[in-house]
Image 1 (tube, rainbow, N blue to C red):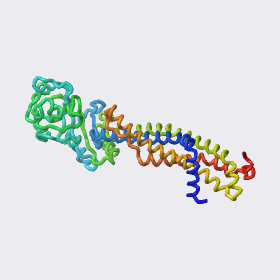
Image 2: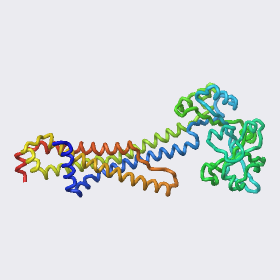
Image 3: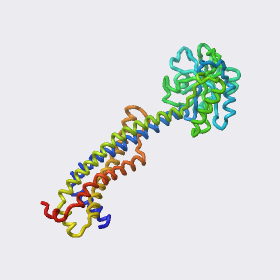
Length: 397
Protein backbone atom coordinates (compact mmCIF):
# COMPACT_ATOMS: atom_id res chain seq x y z
CA UNK A 1 0.00 0.00 0.00
CA UNK A 2 1.45 3.37 -1.06
CA UNK A 3 1.62 6.38 1.23
CA UNK A 4 -1.05 8.23 -0.80
CA UNK A 5 -3.44 5.30 -0.38
CA UNK A 6 -2.67 5.20 3.35
CA UNK A 7 -3.32 8.94 3.63
CA UNK A 8 -6.63 8.74 1.73
CA UNK A 9 -7.80 5.84 3.88
CA UNK A 10 -6.84 7.74 7.04
CA UNK A 11 -8.72 10.81 5.78
CA UNK A 12 -11.80 8.68 5.04
CA UNK A 13 -11.78 7.19 8.53
CA UNK A 14 -11.44 10.66 10.12
CA UNK A 15 -14.29 12.12 8.05
CA UNK A 16 -16.54 9.14 8.76
CA UNK A 17 -16.80 10.29 12.38
CA UNK A 18 -16.56 14.09 12.23
CA UNK A 19 -17.83 14.88 15.73
CA UNK A 20 -15.44 12.46 17.42
CA UNK A 21 -12.56 13.71 15.26
CA UNK A 22 -13.24 17.35 16.17
CA UNK A 23 -13.43 16.52 19.87
CA UNK A 24 -10.18 14.58 19.51
CA UNK A 25 -8.53 17.58 17.87
CA UNK A 26 -9.82 20.05 20.46
CA UNK A 27 -6.81 19.84 22.76
CA UNK A 28 -4.44 20.30 19.81
CA UNK A 29 -6.51 23.23 18.45
CA UNK A 30 -6.51 25.03 21.81
CA UNK A 31 -2.82 24.35 22.39
CA UNK A 32 -1.68 25.52 18.96
CA UNK A 33 -3.90 28.60 19.10
CA UNK A 34 -2.60 29.56 22.54
CA UNK A 35 1.06 29.03 21.65
CA UNK A 36 0.89 31.00 18.37
CA UNK A 37 -1.10 33.89 19.89
CA UNK A 38 1.20 34.14 22.93
CA UNK A 39 4.33 34.12 20.75
CA UNK A 40 2.66 36.67 18.47
CA UNK A 41 1.97 38.81 21.53
CA UNK A 42 5.62 38.56 22.51
CA UNK A 43 6.70 39.57 19.01
CA UNK A 44 4.31 42.51 19.10
CA UNK A 45 5.58 43.61 22.52
CA UNK A 46 9.18 43.44 21.32
CA UNK A 47 8.43 45.53 18.22
CA UNK A 48 6.44 48.02 20.33
CA UNK A 49 9.32 48.41 22.78
CA UNK A 50 11.83 48.86 19.97
CA UNK A 51 9.67 51.57 18.40
CA UNK A 52 9.25 53.25 21.79
CA UNK A 53 12.96 53.14 22.56
CA UNK A 54 13.83 54.34 19.07
CA UNK A 55 12.65 57.83 20.04
CA UNK A 56 15.20 57.75 22.87
CA UNK A 57 17.92 56.68 20.47
CA UNK A 58 18.94 53.03 20.66
CA UNK A 59 22.47 54.04 19.67
CA UNK A 60 22.88 56.46 22.57
CA UNK A 61 24.53 56.31 25.98
CA UNK A 62 23.96 58.62 28.91
CA UNK A 63 26.79 59.63 31.21
CA UNK A 64 25.87 60.89 34.68
CA UNK A 65 28.65 62.36 36.80
CA UNK A 66 27.76 61.52 40.38
CA UNK A 67 29.69 64.28 42.15
CA UNK A 68 30.80 61.94 44.93
CA UNK A 69 33.57 59.54 45.70
CA UNK A 70 37.22 60.09 46.51
CA UNK A 71 38.03 61.92 43.26
CA UNK A 72 38.18 65.70 43.32
CA UNK A 73 38.48 66.06 39.56
CA UNK A 74 35.81 67.79 37.46
CA UNK A 75 35.12 66.45 33.98
CA UNK A 76 34.65 69.36 31.60
CA UNK A 77 32.91 69.39 28.24
CA UNK A 78 36.31 69.64 26.58
CA UNK A 79 37.42 66.45 28.33
CA UNK A 80 34.39 64.53 27.05
CA UNK A 81 34.96 65.91 23.56
CA UNK A 82 38.53 64.62 23.70
CA UNK A 83 37.34 61.13 24.73
CA UNK A 84 34.86 61.05 21.84
CA UNK A 85 37.38 62.34 19.27
CA UNK A 86 40.11 59.91 20.34
CA UNK A 87 37.72 56.96 20.02
CA UNK A 88 36.03 57.92 16.76
CA UNK A 89 35.67 54.25 15.78
CA UNK A 90 33.15 53.81 18.60
CA UNK A 91 31.72 57.26 19.39
CA UNK A 92 30.12 59.80 17.08
CA UNK A 93 28.13 62.74 18.50
CA UNK A 94 28.20 64.34 21.94
CA UNK A 95 25.93 66.76 23.76
CA UNK A 96 25.96 67.99 27.36
CA UNK A 97 22.52 68.14 29.00
CA UNK A 98 21.51 70.40 31.88
CA UNK A 99 18.07 70.31 33.52
CA UNK A 100 16.76 73.74 34.48
CA UNK A 101 14.31 73.96 37.36
CA UNK A 102 12.06 76.97 37.65
CA UNK A 103 9.13 78.74 36.07
CA UNK A 104 8.32 79.38 32.44
CA UNK A 105 6.10 82.31 31.57
CA UNK A 106 4.74 83.26 28.18
CA UNK A 107 3.04 86.60 28.52
CA UNK A 108 0.93 86.28 31.65
CA UNK A 109 0.57 82.49 31.38
CA UNK A 110 2.72 80.10 33.42
CA UNK A 111 3.76 76.74 31.95
CA UNK A 112 3.69 74.38 34.93
CA UNK A 113 4.69 71.15 33.20
CA UNK A 114 7.08 72.44 30.54
CA UNK A 115 10.57 70.95 30.73
CA UNK A 116 13.58 73.19 30.12
CA UNK A 117 16.83 71.51 29.12
CA UNK A 118 20.22 72.94 28.26
CA UNK A 119 21.71 71.08 25.29
CA UNK A 120 24.49 71.21 22.73
CA UNK A 121 24.06 71.83 19.02
CA UNK A 122 24.22 68.09 18.21
CA UNK A 123 21.49 67.14 20.67
CA UNK A 124 18.72 67.47 18.08
CA UNK A 125 20.45 65.06 15.69
CA UNK A 126 21.14 62.64 18.55
CA UNK A 127 17.47 62.57 19.54
CA UNK A 128 16.18 62.72 15.93
CA UNK A 129 14.32 65.99 16.60
CA UNK A 130 13.34 67.62 13.32
CA UNK A 131 12.98 71.32 12.70
CA UNK A 132 9.83 72.69 11.05
CA UNK A 133 10.44 76.43 11.36
CA UNK A 134 13.37 78.75 12.12
CA UNK A 135 16.74 77.28 13.08
CA UNK A 136 18.28 74.99 15.67
CA UNK A 137 20.77 76.02 18.34
CA UNK A 138 24.23 76.69 16.93
CA UNK A 139 27.80 76.84 18.21
CA UNK A 140 27.63 80.64 18.49
CA UNK A 141 24.69 80.27 20.91
CA UNK A 142 26.85 78.07 23.13
CA UNK A 143 29.95 80.23 22.81
CA UNK A 144 28.24 83.51 23.69
CA UNK A 145 25.78 81.99 26.16
CA UNK A 146 22.92 83.54 24.29
CA UNK A 147 19.34 83.62 25.56
CA UNK A 148 17.93 81.73 22.59
CA UNK A 149 15.68 78.69 22.62
CA UNK A 150 13.97 76.06 20.48
CA UNK A 151 10.44 75.02 21.47
CA UNK A 152 8.27 71.94 20.92
CA UNK A 153 5.13 71.83 18.79
CA UNK A 154 2.74 72.01 21.78
CA UNK A 155 4.15 75.35 22.94
CA UNK A 156 4.18 76.66 19.37
CA UNK A 157 0.55 75.72 18.74
CA UNK A 158 -1.06 76.60 22.08
CA UNK A 159 0.94 79.61 23.23
CA UNK A 160 2.06 81.25 19.99
CA UNK A 161 -0.72 80.17 17.59
CA UNK A 162 1.86 78.52 15.33
CA UNK A 163 4.09 81.60 15.05
CA UNK A 164 6.63 81.10 17.84
CA UNK A 165 9.78 82.05 15.88
CA UNK A 166 10.87 85.55 16.83
CA UNK A 167 8.62 85.64 19.90
CA UNK A 168 9.92 85.71 23.47
CA UNK A 169 9.31 83.84 26.72
CA UNK A 170 10.74 84.00 30.23
CA UNK A 171 12.59 81.25 32.10
CA UNK A 172 13.15 82.08 35.76
CA UNK A 173 12.63 85.73 34.95
CA UNK A 174 15.18 85.78 32.08
CA UNK A 175 13.88 86.60 28.63
CA UNK A 176 14.63 84.15 25.79
CA UNK A 177 14.01 84.52 22.08
CA UNK A 178 12.48 81.59 20.20
CA UNK A 179 14.66 80.80 17.17
CA UNK A 180 13.17 77.47 16.12
CA UNK A 181 10.18 75.12 16.36
CA UNK A 182 10.43 71.32 16.40
CA UNK A 183 8.20 68.87 14.59
CA UNK A 184 5.54 67.01 16.57
CA UNK A 185 6.89 63.89 18.28
CA UNK A 186 4.09 62.72 20.57
CA UNK A 187 0.45 63.81 20.66
CA UNK A 188 1.46 67.43 21.19
CA UNK A 189 -0.21 67.87 24.54
CA UNK A 190 0.72 69.26 27.93
CA UNK A 191 3.45 67.33 29.74
CA UNK A 192 4.38 65.44 26.54
CA UNK A 193 7.75 65.44 24.77
CA UNK A 194 6.42 68.31 22.65
CA UNK A 195 5.92 70.47 25.74
CA UNK A 196 9.64 71.25 25.96
CA UNK A 197 12.10 74.11 25.65
CA UNK A 198 15.76 73.71 24.67
CA UNK A 199 18.37 76.36 25.45
CA UNK A 200 22.20 76.41 25.05
CA UNK A 201 23.84 74.26 27.74
CA UNK A 202 26.26 77.06 28.57
CA UNK A 203 23.34 79.36 29.35
CA UNK A 204 21.61 76.63 31.36
CA UNK A 205 24.80 75.93 33.32
CA UNK A 206 25.07 79.58 34.28
CA UNK A 207 21.42 79.63 35.36
CA UNK A 208 21.85 76.46 37.43
CA UNK A 209 25.03 77.73 39.12
CA UNK A 210 26.73 74.39 38.74
CA UNK A 211 29.01 72.29 36.59
CA UNK A 212 27.66 70.11 33.79
CA UNK A 213 27.13 66.59 35.08
CA UNK A 214 25.26 64.84 32.28
CA UNK A 215 26.16 63.96 28.69
CA UNK A 216 24.55 62.09 25.82
CA UNK A 217 26.90 60.19 23.48
CA UNK A 218 26.01 58.32 20.29
CA UNK A 219 27.70 55.12 19.16
CA UNK A 220 28.92 54.58 15.62
CA UNK A 221 27.17 51.20 15.54
CA UNK A 222 24.62 49.47 17.76
CA UNK A 223 26.46 46.22 17.05
CA UNK A 224 29.32 47.42 19.25
CA UNK A 225 27.10 48.73 22.06
CA UNK A 226 28.69 46.57 24.74
CA UNK A 227 32.25 47.38 23.67
CA UNK A 228 31.43 51.09 23.39
CA UNK A 229 29.98 51.19 26.90
CA UNK A 230 32.96 49.34 28.35
CA UNK A 231 35.38 51.67 26.54
CA UNK A 232 33.63 54.78 27.82
CA UNK A 233 33.61 53.44 31.36
CA UNK A 234 37.32 52.68 31.05
CA UNK A 235 38.07 56.22 29.84
CA UNK A 236 36.07 57.72 32.71
CA UNK A 237 37.79 55.47 35.23
CA UNK A 238 41.20 56.55 33.95
CA UNK A 239 40.11 60.17 34.45
CA UNK A 240 38.54 59.81 37.91
CA UNK A 241 40.22 56.66 39.29
CA UNK A 242 36.97 56.15 41.16
CA UNK A 243 34.01 54.05 39.92
CA UNK A 244 31.60 55.93 42.19
CA UNK A 245 32.15 59.20 40.33
CA UNK A 246 30.21 58.28 37.20
CA UNK A 247 27.50 56.04 35.77
CA UNK A 248 27.08 55.06 32.12
CA UNK A 249 23.75 53.72 30.86
CA UNK A 250 22.97 52.52 27.35
CA UNK A 251 19.52 52.68 25.77
CA UNK A 252 20.22 49.55 23.72
CA UNK A 253 21.35 47.77 26.89
CA UNK A 254 18.10 48.70 28.63
CA UNK A 255 16.15 47.55 25.58
CA UNK A 256 18.00 44.22 25.53
CA UNK A 257 17.29 43.71 29.24
CA UNK A 258 13.58 44.43 28.80
CA UNK A 259 13.42 42.24 25.69
CA UNK A 260 15.16 39.42 27.54
CA UNK A 261 12.70 39.64 30.45
CA UNK A 262 9.77 39.75 28.03
CA UNK A 263 11.06 36.72 26.13
CA UNK A 264 11.40 34.75 29.37
CA UNK A 265 7.83 35.62 30.33
CA UNK A 266 6.47 34.74 26.88
CA UNK A 267 8.42 31.47 26.84
CA UNK A 268 6.98 30.47 30.24
CA UNK A 269 3.45 31.31 29.07
CA UNK A 270 3.99 29.43 25.80
CA UNK A 271 5.21 26.34 27.70
CA UNK A 272 2.16 26.50 29.97
CA UNK A 273 -0.09 26.81 26.91
CA UNK A 274 1.83 23.95 25.29
CA UNK A 275 0.70 21.62 28.08
CA UNK A 276 -2.67 21.49 26.33
CA UNK A 277 -0.84 20.02 23.33
CA UNK A 278 0.28 17.13 25.50
CA UNK A 279 -3.27 16.77 26.79
CA UNK A 280 -4.46 16.78 23.19
CA UNK A 281 -1.92 14.08 22.35
CA UNK A 282 -3.18 11.91 25.19
CA UNK A 283 -6.71 12.41 23.83
CA UNK A 284 -5.56 11.26 20.39
CA UNK A 285 -3.90 8.17 21.90
CA UNK A 286 -7.08 7.36 23.82
CA UNK A 287 -9.31 7.67 20.74
CA UNK A 288 -6.87 5.64 18.63
CA UNK A 289 -6.91 2.86 21.23
CA UNK A 290 -10.71 2.88 21.05
CA UNK A 291 -10.47 2.84 17.27
CA UNK A 292 -8.20 -0.22 17.36
CA UNK A 293 -10.72 -2.02 19.54
CA UNK A 294 -13.61 -1.03 17.24
CA UNK A 295 -11.71 -2.13 14.11
CA UNK A 296 -10.23 -5.35 15.48
CA UNK A 297 -12.13 -7.53 12.99
CA UNK A 298 -11.10 -5.24 10.11
CA UNK A 299 -7.46 -5.57 11.18
CA UNK A 300 -7.85 -9.37 11.36
CA UNK A 301 -9.27 -9.50 7.81
CA UNK A 302 -6.46 -7.33 6.45
CA UNK A 303 -3.80 -9.48 8.14
CA UNK A 304 -5.51 -12.68 6.90
CA UNK A 305 -5.31 -11.26 3.38
CA UNK A 306 -1.55 -10.78 3.75
CA UNK A 307 -1.18 -7.25 5.10
CA UNK A 308 2.16 -6.92 6.89
CA UNK A 309 2.51 -5.51 10.39
CA UNK A 310 4.35 -2.42 9.11
CA UNK A 311 1.39 -1.49 6.85
CA UNK A 312 -1.12 -1.86 9.69
CA UNK A 313 1.13 0.18 11.95
CA UNK A 314 1.67 2.86 9.29
CA UNK A 315 -2.09 3.13 8.78
CA UNK A 316 -2.84 3.95 12.42
CA UNK A 317 0.18 6.24 12.83
CA UNK A 318 -0.89 8.14 9.72
CA UNK A 319 -4.43 8.53 11.06
CA UNK A 320 -3.11 9.90 14.34
CA UNK A 321 -0.69 12.27 12.55
CA UNK A 322 -3.37 13.53 10.13
CA UNK A 323 -5.83 14.10 13.00
CA UNK A 324 -3.22 16.05 14.97
CA UNK A 325 -1.94 18.01 11.94
CA UNK A 326 -5.48 18.94 10.94
CA UNK A 327 -6.07 20.21 14.46
CA UNK A 328 -2.84 22.20 14.14
CA UNK A 329 -4.00 23.83 10.89
CA UNK A 330 -7.36 24.77 12.43
CA UNK A 331 -5.51 26.15 15.46
CA UNK A 332 -3.22 28.27 13.25
CA UNK A 333 -6.19 29.74 11.37
CA UNK A 334 -7.95 30.46 14.65
CA UNK A 335 -4.78 32.04 16.09
CA UNK A 336 -4.64 34.59 13.25
CA UNK A 337 -8.29 35.51 13.86
CA UNK A 338 -7.67 35.93 17.60
CA UNK A 339 -4.45 37.89 16.94
CA UNK A 340 -6.35 40.34 14.76
CA UNK A 341 -9.05 40.70 17.43
CA UNK A 342 -6.43 41.12 20.19
CA UNK A 343 -4.70 43.87 18.18
CA UNK A 344 -7.97 45.78 17.84
CA UNK A 345 -8.70 45.43 21.58
CA UNK A 346 -5.20 46.55 22.62
CA UNK A 347 -5.31 49.60 20.35
CA UNK A 348 -8.78 50.65 21.44
CA UNK A 349 -8.54 49.91 25.17
CA UNK A 350 -4.85 50.57 25.92
CA UNK A 351 -4.38 53.13 23.12
CA UNK A 352 -1.06 51.53 22.25
CA UNK A 353 0.09 51.04 18.66
CA UNK A 354 0.96 47.38 19.23
CA UNK A 355 0.27 44.59 16.76
CA UNK A 356 -0.09 40.97 17.82
CA UNK A 357 1.75 39.41 14.90
CA UNK A 358 2.40 35.64 14.80
CA UNK A 359 5.80 34.85 13.29
CA UNK A 360 6.44 32.25 10.61
CA UNK A 361 8.71 30.46 13.08
CA UNK A 362 5.94 30.15 15.69
CA UNK A 363 3.47 28.89 13.06
CA UNK A 364 5.87 26.26 11.71
CA UNK A 365 6.90 25.28 15.24
CA UNK A 366 3.31 24.86 16.40
CA UNK A 367 2.38 22.86 13.29
CA UNK A 368 5.48 20.66 13.58
CA UNK A 369 4.83 19.97 17.26
CA UNK A 370 1.18 19.14 16.60
CA UNK A 371 2.09 16.66 13.85
CA UNK A 372 4.90 15.21 15.99
CA UNK A 373 2.55 14.73 18.94
CA UNK A 374 0.15 12.82 16.69
CA UNK A 375 2.92 10.48 15.58
CA UNK A 376 4.29 10.06 19.12
CA UNK A 377 0.97 9.34 20.80
CA UNK A 378 -0.30 7.33 17.83
CA UNK A 379 2.63 4.93 17.97
CA UNK A 380 1.38 2.78 20.88
CA UNK A 381 -2.13 2.20 19.48
CA UNK A 382 -0.59 1.51 16.05
CA UNK A 383 1.81 -1.01 17.56
CA UNK A 384 -1.06 -2.70 19.40
CA UNK A 385 -3.02 -2.97 16.16
CA UNK A 386 -0.04 -4.34 14.23
CA UNK A 387 0.63 -7.03 16.83
CA UNK A 388 -2.94 -8.42 16.92
CA UNK A 389 -3.17 -12.13 16.20
CA UNK A 390 -5.23 -12.46 12.99
CA UNK A 391 -7.13 -15.53 14.28
CA UNK A 392 -8.06 -13.81 17.55
CA UNK A 393 -8.96 -10.67 15.63
CA UNK A 394 -11.30 -12.54 13.30
CA UNK A 395 -13.01 -14.13 16.30
CA UNK A 396 -13.52 -10.74 18.00
CA UNK A 397 -17.13 -9.67 18.24
